Every structure is written in structure tokens, then in C-alpha cells.
Amino acid sequence: MSKQTLVMKFGGTSVGSADALRNVTQIIRDAKKDWKRIVVVTSAMSGVTNLLLDSAALATQGKVDSLPAAESTLREKHFSAADKLIKNENLREEAKAEINTLILSLVDLCKAIAVLGEASPRAMDAVASLGERMSVHLLAAVVNDAGIQAKGIESTEFVVTNAHFQNAHPDFKATAEKTKQLLNPLMDKGIIPITTGFIGATPDGAITTLGRGGSDYSAAIIGSVLPANDVWIWTDVDGIMTTDPRIVKEAKTLSEITYSEIAELAYYGAKVLHPKTIRPVIDAGIGLRICNTFNPAHPGTRLIANIPSDSKPRDGQVVKAVTAIRNQRLVTIEGRGMLGVPGVAARAFGAVASTKTSVPLITQASSEQSICFAVPAESAASVLSALQAVFASEIEDEDIDRVWMTEDVSIITVVGVGMSHTPGVAGQVFSKLGDSKANVLAIAQGSSEVSISMVVAAADTELAVKSLHELIVQ
Ligand code: ADP
Ligand code: ASP
Ligand code: MG
Image: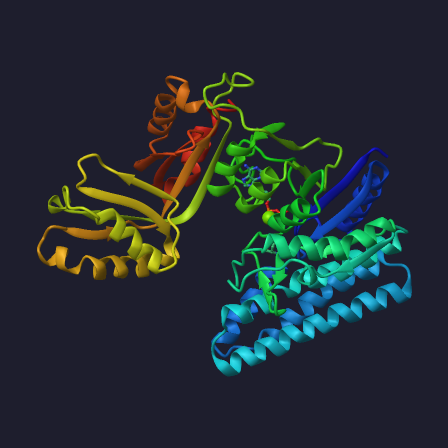
């Protein structure tokens, strides 16, 4: 046993059924042979976080009729796995009782929300946290029952965050102190801490979440503060693939990918890894691997250090992967009077920032007569009114002719180190898109020089991804 510390995170599908949990137990057992110290981070069972948030959203409209159905779905999901896997009656009944208490607190929270007629971000986090809290009880009992010493522990006890509910930011220093204090003594005794992904708590104990899909980030945070040698993200596909296999079934696993490539992919919609996961792992110099709970023998994808963007493609393949973010709108500010007016862009993005919207893509024509950028569709209306307000006098003076937005669009991004230094890649990308008849509404090249993004109408998303993927896999 040469290796030191490993953090393994299991996603929703990986802990989503009795069969999946059996695989997880075996994976932990195998890892124990090679690693001295292991921490396990678990997501909520698949579908659970959505169910919890939907229940809370209905409660804000005073609707609590579907609560009994939600309760029984949650019981059935967790209890049936517990009944199938936990032979020791005490362990089983204890885990079920803990889970039941959490289900009852969902009911209480939703009833309170229904009375108030609204849910604060803080209340939404209290609801959303229940999924991971339930699964940690289940998984810890399952693993213990299989004869592996483990202890369930909620990450609210050691992941300290600010009070930015629903998208909280960790305080790495405070988290490091508490994490070591709580997890090291367990690991020193050979006990595997099994903890909740996705959630943390403010210094005064209010539960926060790190944003949807944030369990990957939890694993990176914990890995970086311990520090671990490796973080392994166990999911339901064979690693990072050339594109989302749900869109293109020919998608292939990439055996390795650089940090900057995965950063672009994750940022531009590849759900397989939460974009915030990468930074703590790079900063702490930790190895990251993405692998498949349902095919553990497959090596998956390894992240490798960045290589200069002018280096030769590692395997003759310049374009490595294609990804898409759906449900965006393109907002355009245009007017001949904008030419040379200082500060238009600053005021525009100030107005966007005031709505707390982030902008995934910006393009500006060199004529300076228009600025065009993407925002998530759900924020588009508030962005548009903020822009109209901030430019009210320019609109009146007709220096700005109009501020308008498209229907739903998607951002399609191709990623690969060396793209910007390899002549002809952009040409291939656009001719592929041209052949596919997908209409390109805007283009941007990532500043990191490892990506090119194109905006297409929502209806052209699959067409665009499929045709660009042909540049990678014929
Ligand atoms: P988990 O619950 O394990 O966190 P997610 O559903 O969040 O899993 O992410 C895994 C999913 O990401 C895959 O099932 C796949 O459909 C999707 N995905 C999107 N883009 C990619 C990609 N480039 N490579 C692999 N999977 C991708
Ligand atoms: N359960 C959370 C979500 O569905 C976090 C995660 O799975 O990563 O968003
Ligand atoms: Mg995920």
C-alpha cells in the first residue's frame, strides 16, 4: 500500500439504486487495497435534488398536495436500497430512521414555505441539502454492513462557506482547519469518512449549497485542503468524452485532457464535471481522474498539466471535444451613435451585473456599432430592462437604435489545445457547420486560445454538435 490519500466522489446515478450502490461498495473495497486514507463524497440519489426543489417551488404557490407523493417516492428510493443491501437490522433501521427524519423535515419546510408564500435562498438550500444528507446515511450503512469501517459525517460540519445561499463560496482556510480536525482522526484509525457533496455551512451554522452539480466541487475542496494525492470523480460514463454521449452515440472517451481544455469544456456546458472543480485541484497540484462506476475497469480520463498552446497536437487531433450550452439568449445593443462613445461596454456590463447575471460569451464588431453577448434565457428579461434603463437617454437621442434579444439559442464550443496555432482549424469548423446548414448567429474565440464558440438557434443545437463532432470521430 504505497499511495497516501484519495478522495472519491460518487454522482447521483452512481448511488441511485441498490445495484449501483453495490458497485460503489466494491470500488471502495478495491481502493482500500491501494490507498492508506480514503474519503468518500456522495451526491444525492439521482432525481432526488430535483424532486426536493420542485416540492419547494410548488410550496411557494401554496401547493402542498403533492407532498405525500414526494414523501413516498423518497422513502421508496432510499428504503428499498437499504432493505436490499443492509443485512444488519440495527444498521438498517438506524439508517432508515435518520432518512425518515430528513423526509419529515422536507414536509415541515415545505409547509412553512406554503404559509409564507415564498422561499428565501436560505430556505431553498435547507431543502436542497436533504438529498445528500439522506444518501450519506444510506451509503455509510451500506459500506459498514459490507464490513468496511466507515463513518457518515455531514460536510456542514467542516465545509465552511460564505452566506451566498445557492451558490456559496468556501472559506478554504477555515475549511482546511475543520476538515483536518474532523477527518484525519478517523482516517488515522482506518475509518473511511463518507460525507455529503454539494453542501456546506456558514460560520454560524446555516446550511448552504455550492450550486447545482456542486458535489464535484466538494470533492475538489476536500481534496485540496487535506491535501489528497488524487481526486476521482465516479460518474455514469467512461470519463470525459469527445461530446455528450446523450447527443452523439459515437462519442469516445478521451484518455487524457489538459486542465485548460477541461476548464473550457466544463464552463461551456459539459455537465460531466462542475466547472469550479478544476481550480482547487490545479492549485493544490492534485491528480484528477473521471471514471465510470458502472465500468470500473475502464481507466477513464486523467487530467494532465497544461501544455503550451503552440505545441503540436498530442495525437494528431487538434479538435478534442464539442460541447453545448442550451437555453441562452443573445442580447444586442446597436446604434450608429455608439461609435466612439466611451464607456458603453462598461455601462452595459454594469447593468447586466446589477441583475446578478453572468455572461458566458461576448462579441463586438470592430465597427463598434454593436455589442452582442449571451445570457441565460431565464435572466434575459431582467437584463433587457436593466439595459433599457441605463441607456434610456441614448435611446431617446437615437445614439442607440435598439436593445434587443433573440429567441432561445445555444452556444456550441469546440475545444482543443493548439487550435489557434493550427492553420485551417477555424475554416474546417465553419465549413462543417455550413454543410450542416446550421445558421451561425455569433462567434467568439476563447481568450485561453483553446476554444472557439459559436451561437446557433436552439433548433440547430444537435445538428451543430453532431456535425462538428465529425471533425473528431468520423
Ligand atoms: P453525476 O451525477 O455523476 O455527477 P452528471 O449527470 O452530472 O453525473 O454528469 C454526467 C453526464 O454528463 C453524462 O451522463 C453525460 O450525459 C454528460 N456529459 C455531457 N458532456 C459530456 C462529455 N463531454 N463527456 C462525458 N459526459 C458528458
Ligand atoms: N445533488 C446535487 C444536484 O443535483 C449536487 C450534485 O449531484 O452534484 O445538483
Ligand atoms: Mg454532476
